[in-house]
Image 1 (spheres, rainbow, N blue to C red):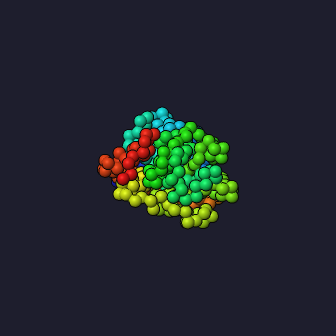
Image 2: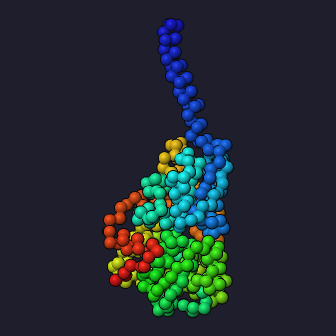
Image 3: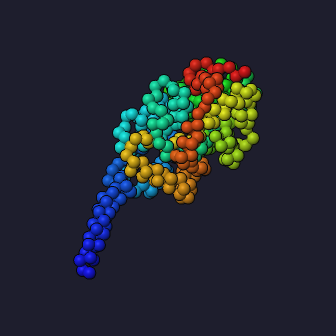
Length: 359
């Protein structure tokens, strides 16, 4: 009986030993991949703007939810409407999971339309999510022009938009307004940083700027008393307009009301499809699997953390967090757009050339 007992015990002992060895070697590696390391968040804009504010809130909660408590730092990499930062994530940074990015929503359209200068495809990235589907936007015009309605806007010739660069997500909003309203001889003055744009409009270097409703109420609410006008707004991808921010002036018409041709309607639909979220967080798809699973789990915890939503709203002066997961974003952006005519029209809109025909 003693010998039989030994024969049965040894194999079981060996199996347990092997399993314990594997567990001790492999299991701790996954949750603590980032322990003792520095994680860099590349931001595709200059510091101090509304996008930077949003990112800082996310970083605080990433520190909370990512196992191993790595050091997390920001690196600002503006340029090309987000192209510089996005290219860096794709081909410049090491694909070790220690560099992630948050970039302009023009990332989507630039890749889809194969814009010059991009060195990435959307398939190069895993999307980690976004704190919101994007903000409603407002066109703000300096007081001297006295453009208080869409009708006056449509009759004005040579309106000068202040902008960062051709292809920037806000530049595209400018161009959509000019296209749908068929503005007369609109012009773009580019090369400003986010903090320089309102100064340029105040000084008369440009006539108009596009800004989110939240950013306007946070940074320049006094402009309303100083005579700046807001003739039109643009809804976000979920159809939210000024009603989402009660303190913003209500009753201002939205751009979709003036899409009076099939071409205009189709272009606005394509634009909506190409902007399924606000500024997304991305990482190279080829990082180590353990890093990928750790990041995805951490970001999903952020988006479902009720404290994050409260802090996000406080930091952004009332902007409501409405997170989209990476899976949600990917399910939308990898749907194929097949209408070549609309694609070509949209490509002309986001470029530096003349606006396409609207009729």
